[in-house]
Image (cartoon, rainbow, N blue to C red; front, top):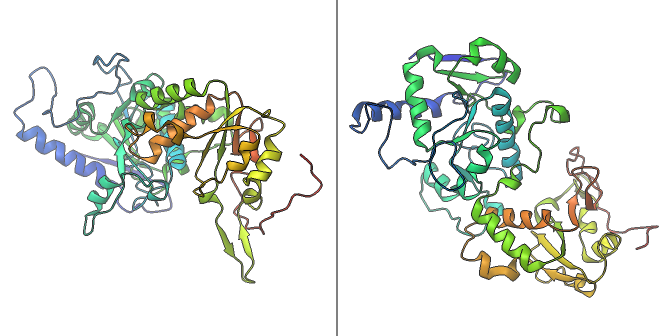
Length: 401
């Protein structure tokens, strides 16, 4: 099979086509050896996940009806790229996944979604472990979870047609691409999405393979500050949580009743380092101060009246850290609903996705840092900092509650 390669970027990829080449080779062997092909179409043994790209809401299987061209970014989010050995947190991975989904929308192609998602061990302490002397693939399996345990692929496919990379449909696409020769696969790097859509060199190809890029996926997105070019809002993937997670969130919301919510991010963003004079500096100089209970009480007084139920989601690990807020509010945490969550939750990503649904359903929702001008936030420090390390500030002058 003739494979068309296009490399325009300055950085030479480490292994541009290895993942897809191995996949195609595997499919070739299956195609030759398997006696399970029907005369009317392509099928595989039941060891392959039988889910196709678009599922009906009542779980009845239906025919794939999305665009019959495909976009593949790799079988791991942000890999190839700088996060192949480890992985970024959920927020960064969602940025990458949203970027790839947007490109699939723009190109009117079906997106091939990784069937497993890496869980950063820093953000997880449940169900993740590393076996001694394990291979990289075993470590990946240990530190990942099924993508459809986090996201509802049915729901995503209502907006962007999606197939999983362990699905029967994906294996059919790979086998078909072999038969099409040069019209089967294009491995691209440094090619704009406009060129991919408009130039026949790419637009007529069955499968566009982005694994040639050495960059993290979200780094491939262009004009992120140009809101007219953004097809999916930040809220898209959070609202696409798996059905079991949505059900749990609804149960907890019903028990909370009329409530407000607050997300307090501390642990992983309070990192400091010493400059050459031994002075501690931080990328978020006011955040430690702004997320302390006495300052939180002062900040949110104008938004949340006394006596309200306040749901708090936080990565702060100090027991009783938020207890001072109980003088004014009825505090609630996800740990209060262990009867709902313990039988369901397998990792901290699932827990956070449920908490995120609860927070966005609140009467008033206060974030740690602003993402949009209309957000209510505990701190005025920008979430996207300019990599400027400043001396932390722990006092608040000339301001009264």
